[in-house]
Length: 453
Image (cartoon, rainbow, N blue to C red; front, side, top):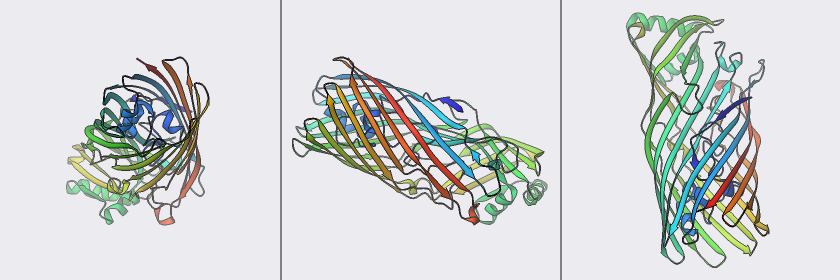
């Protein structure tokens, strides 16, 4: 079992993965164990400091004068298997990812504010060198995508029933990739206009002959094998706006807008492209620089309701629209090297993700003094088309069933926990796109200790 510790600390209690298997596409189904225990519903009630990752206006629903520190840890346990007819199953070795987290919020008068670090999301897989995913290269296949945030939120009570909130987010992104591609696939991309290669005439003749050779493989590699960083990285910014409005003593509505990230191109020096002949024979290596062009996380719109049905029972429901189609049209990578007289590659791998509609339903029941039980569900469409699904990018799961609980340890401290079960989804690429299938399911958990200061 491959294990990692992910230390992109998450916004106080909002636990999500900066690596593989964020589960509404590349985003978590819920930020923080309070919200995730309720299927991710979080727009219209106080869900702690993780509200700055969900709807920053909810921070204003804290009691006046409260100050809260949250320390948390979470785990993601994906189960991903890629299958190709006539080949042994390829099982991803990335099966356990652990995440510490920390954050702080305070309300003073009509203003609530704080600071938190969190991982917005990501995806990835790890396949052994002897699987079919390596296309006969004899090398491992691996992907890691991480996007994290440092959030500074503010919420203002502009009227007794109305809170307006917003945040400024400093964003960083990282990526590792070890990807084998058959020479014939590269030729097909060139014919479709998705791959251009610029090189001196002798080098072009050599590369053209290589791509035409049966069983030849190009192996793209930029990876630092670190639990903390990606080989290619960049920074940028984003922001959020939100509101909550109390419609009655029992009903509160919330709404939020998360902007698209504005990350610079991710860059890495020391990237390689190995030219590997049929049977794994080394034919040469190009060493140079790689650039991931305009990789962004999408804008998100959200609307929710929280209903205090009885003194001990709250019911919440959210709807989110995630605009994947605007940021995941293709995966655009450039590689340049001084080897072989100078070579420049410009590659676009079509993705064509669809926008995603997410419905979260949850309930919280006060079972006893200091004890709250939670349950929920999170239902979404799979944004990844079957004709572009890739074993390295299987962000395909759709349903989540969640449980959670909160326990008051004392008058100033509390423990909250959640568990998400994600049933397997199997997507099969059409024969023209490879004909393989990918099955993806997982189990997630989060645990948080909160202290009033």
